[in-house]
Image (cartoon, rainbow, N blue to C red; front, top):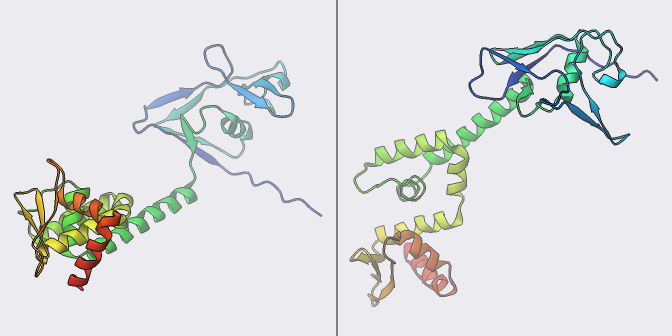
Length: 248
């Protein structure tokens, strides 16, 4: 049975830093200043690496005396290595800077990541479009830290959708947060007139036959967060059921 031949291909590498210099040279041999050691799992020893284009191995102890050293230079943040230079490709694969200072360019992987990011942003935008006004206000107030009192519905929709587009993962996590959903429900209790906030700190029932005070919001705390936290407690679950029945 014939073994499949290894496919030799041209490879490209790029520096990981955001702003790459015009020219950047990485260490190409093991020295006291730049340690280039490879741990051999079979022998349990660290082996010195050295890039020499005219050698058949990257390990210094296997190279002959006729060593031709060449610098490894990234131009404008990139280094292109043709398939004919398998020694350099192997050297870069074992280089300690691989994954930290530079990475191999994988166009298929990069494209897949881009598609996943676009899908996530699309999901977030669709979810943002379907939110009701109470949930829009809750997202803006709690997640985005925006004062919504003087915002129009159009402004709310715009700002929440922009947030969803820029931070899709955070947005989707937020709308799936049970506490945030409960805060949205609390907002409805107030908007439907089932509860009243007096003196910016006291929450009262506003039901037929029940106008009692429900709780006091600590100074500086958000009433929706405090109310939602209370409704999650054993005592608050019965209150939640009563209020939900009134909305339904």
